[in-house]
Image 1 (cartoon, helix red, strand yellow):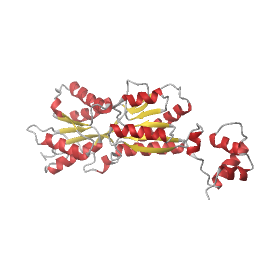
Image 2 (cartoon, rainbow, N blue to C red):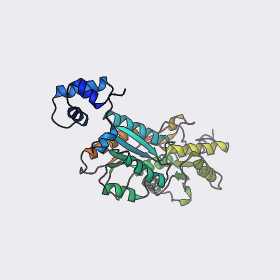
Image 3 (cartoon, one colour):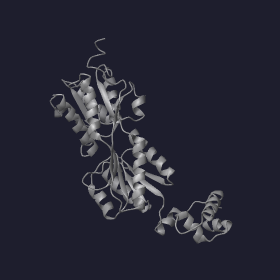
Image 4 (cartoon, rainbow, N blue to C red):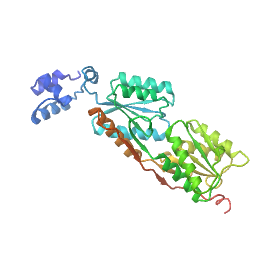
Length: 339
């Protein structure tokens, strides 16, 4: 039978109240007694009841993680880094995917609260700031990762998307490209806005006129990016390079190029964003703007636990620097065709 708190107390020779204090790290207990109770719990494989802890207003040592799309390797890697750090600190993680659907986002937040998680980490591009305002009004611990909501004072960990967009476009310009297109996700999401803004700034620096026709919006799937890229490649003036605002979209661009009997980078240079595992396994390996995913996950977990322990703590906005990782998907315009 599954061990109970009564079994632990009996074998340790202490009261149930003492075992409870050890579990919840409250009260004055000698280190000897604490060590003995912890040893007995381990021997009996005793697992404290999360539900019971929630009902008594105690921590459940559970975090919620809200992701927009688990099919995107970037968010899968975010989930892994968050889980790793949470487990190091004694927390488990409940992961919910919204599939970029606002209604599912609201339902998942409600579900996580019903499950009595201690705090929620949000990686979705929350379009309805009323959701966050409501959580803040309730003083519920919440933190954002890889997303930004500058209008609200919320603990946030993200990369500098403006610099990342500037890096991507500048690299293509340095290689001699002038007809540079962008494929981005929803421009209502701040990260996409900032990456496009960085791209535009790089063009202005180089004296290249901004052409809004070269900025296209794609849905969140590879097939959608392939269709958008195909439309540009089939136009009378196709771009010589495309900056895809994440590695998943870049994969769709590569597929569109291949379907037309063209090559990367011979006929089209491509730069992605995120530096996920996907960037290393596509052919050719993808030049991309790297986000420090592991460090971002660690920092956001540290932030949310700090909020859980002190709900009046000063809000932090941690902005990390991206890095351009050069691989084989970029060349000078026509370089390979002329060989």
